[in-house]
Each structure stands twice: as C-alpha cells, then as structure tokens.
Image (cartoon, rainbow, N blue to C red; front, top):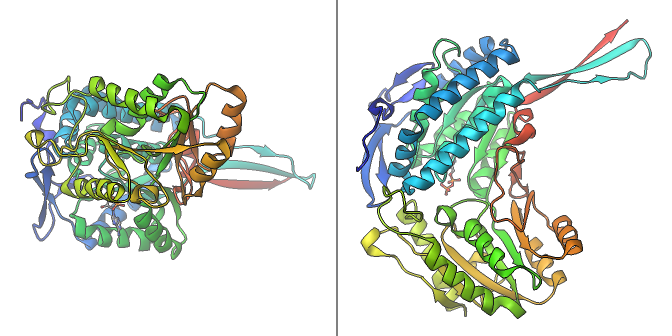
Length: 492
Ligand code: ADP
C-alpha cells in the first residue's frame, strides 16, 4: 500500500465490547478483501451470538450512567470525539480506500461528510427541547421532556462506511443512548478505527457506550437475531437493502422496538424539455456516477424528454470523458474507482445484459477495464431503456450504468417515476418555475433534488417513504428519532 499510516494502531482486528478489545472466544476470524484485486487484506474477529449478547449487556449497563449526563456534558464529549476523528482523517480515509476500493480523494470526502454529522449533532444535543401544553383541566400543568431511548443497535452498510456509521451512531450518542454497532462484513475496519478514536476521548464516556461487533457475512443473521430479540435493545437503526430491512422490521415487532430504516431507492432522474441540458448532465454525473454508482440515492431510472434525448446523451458521453480520471486508487487525482466486490460486478453485468437483450442500445462503456482490476466497471450509458421490461426498472443497479428512457409528457413521466414501490430520492431539471413546484410536490419520495444532483448534507433530513424506509437521519429529526417524548402532568 503506497500509504504510510500515521497511527498504525488504528488497524486493529478485534471487536470492542464494554470498553475492551476482544477477539472471538473460539478465535474465529473472517477476511476483509481489497476490492482493487479481491485479495484478503485483514482478518477480523468473527463474534458469536453470545458475544453480541455480552455487548448488548455492556451497552445496557453503560446506559444507566450515560442517561444521567447533562446535555452540555454530552456535547463536550462529542466535540472531543469529533476533534480526535478530524485529527485522524487521513488514516481513516486510507482504511476506507483499503477495504472499499474508494479512490483516496473520494474517501476523504466521505470522511469529512461523516465528521460534518458529528459537528451538526453537537449543536443539536442542547436543542432537545420539551414543551408546555395548556391543560384542558385548569388545575393541571403538562410538560414534555425528551429522554434517550436506551440501547440502540445499529447495522450499517459498506458503501460509505465512515459516514453511515457517524450519521447513526453520532445521533444516538448525542441523544444520550448507548450503541451496539454491527458494521458491514465488507468494511469492518472503518468501524473499528472509529471505536479506537472513541476510546481516546478518555474517561468521559462510560465503558460500553459504544460497542462494535464484527462478524462474517453468514453470521449477520445471528447477530441480527440477537439484536432484534433482546429486550434491552429499544431501537434498531438499519441502513441496507429493502429485503433485509423488511425482515428486521418484522423481527423487531416481536419486542415492539422502534426502528429506523434507510433502505433502497431506485431514484428517478427527470430531464424536462425546458431544462438547461449541460446543468442536467452535470447533475446526473454527480448523482449517478459518484462512488461508481454505489449509493442508495444514485439516479437509477433516467427519464429524458424525447425532443432533447439525443443531445443529452451526446453531452453526457462527452462530459464523462472529461470528468473521470482513472488510475491507482491511491493517486489523489483519481476520482473513479472499482465496484466493492465481484458480487457488485455481477449485478451490474446482469442489468446491462438484460437491458441489451430486451432492446436497449449500448451507447458508452459496458465493460470491465481489466488493467485496473477485476471489479473496475466503466461508466456506461444505455439508450432506449424501458423500465417496465428491464431489470433496472424494478431493482437498483448499484453501479455506474445510466439507462436513458425517453418520455413525452409531464403526466406520463410522473406516473412512471411514482409507480415504483420505493420512494427515497428523486431528481429533476426544469427552468420553469411553476413546473418546479408542481413536480416537486407530485413526486412520491422522501427527498427531492431540483436542479441539483447531490442532496445529502448533515442539516438535511435524509430518508424515504413507501418501501424506502422509516425515519430520518441527519438534521434535527435524526437526533429526535433516538428520544422518547415523556409527558409530565402536574396537579396544582
Ligand atoms: P448489501 O446487499 O448492500 O450488502 P444488505 O442489506 O444485505 O445490503 O446489508 C446491509 C447490512 O445488513 C450489512 O451490515 C449486512 O451484514 C447486514 N445484514 C444482512 N442480512 C442481515 C440479517 N439477516 N440480520 C442482520 N443484519 C443483516
């Protein structure tokens, strides 16, 4: 690796439970692979279900102390943790590049994005206000307070490990909850490093405030089962696929836990005939090809008005050629990297083959650039795509493929955009002010980007409707989600 770690002790292979670094009791480990060449780079602890139970117990015990901390104290601790993470941002980004194959420049962006959440939550900690409510009975007084819920189980994905973890864990800890985190088996090293930096906050946090339980892909179900069935876990916060999210939500119903679900998207991206075409092209590149297309808010179905689609496709192709620089993921000029695993490549290939065999035309890309590794799938454009008969229409591609679908009317395109079961993000481009409001209000999604391709920010409520999820992350809602409203009625 052409990177010298400033602090190699961040590269621990153990789990973090009750303030202790632990290996699995049976010494079981699992491999973490470098997506650049699919070779194993780390071996981490593969915990059993019983060991996860121990972590939940530690979090429950820590909660008894932590829940009494004042908001000011929680804010100060959060600030210390944030400062320590910021001081180690280069190493954290390098770990992200190692286990996810993200180009180093992109890894730095996602680490900074993660840090922005901690900064935002520092401000929110002291704004968890209650209310006074006029009572119907004159001799009563009614007040509300916001209390932390208890132990939060957090399950995070691989696609932006640092930011996904800090967005969840930071909010829960800001609210006064304690956490058991299960990172994705593909990217546990970022989670471990985050916990190492948490430990360095020192004596402030009770041991067990943050626990990290690692395990292999096949062990996820038993870790998940323990989290869902535990009576101590009061909130399960999950980011991942819709299928797993639905399953976990059903399991959590047995103990009636609160859940936060950030699930799949299949975002529509609409370019109306009155759009500024180059602006729309730039927005699509940001929305579709950032992180090689591996985010849940990436555009997946791209609807372009028939009268401009040829022009749009030509401009998109030309811009792709000048925007992306390929090369070693350790070169800071490089801004496009491989997919996270052979599994990701297979899915992308299937979607492209399926589209082409059903009548789509390959306009650009459509292959793996082998000299850059087995998972390096290049930016791809498909013409004449049809969402009703092709896989991309009902499943996220999660890769750098832009299927362009022609449409004729606003009514038709809104129907197409809204038919799908998910409702995370939608994007559209228009220069018409009344269409701007009309379409933004008509789209059935939790988030809408109008004339922008990037919408995620710490202050913005992030989340979906329909089968894209429950709850919001970031913003003031992201912290409130980890609190219970208590009403106190006082008789005079
Ligand atoms: P992806 O296909 O993007 O990996 P998943 O939904 O499978 O999406 O994974 C997201 C996270 O959910 C990962 O941390 C994964 O290990 C975890 N996960 C997958 N299946 C389960 C399960 N049955 N119980 C708990 N966690 C699970």
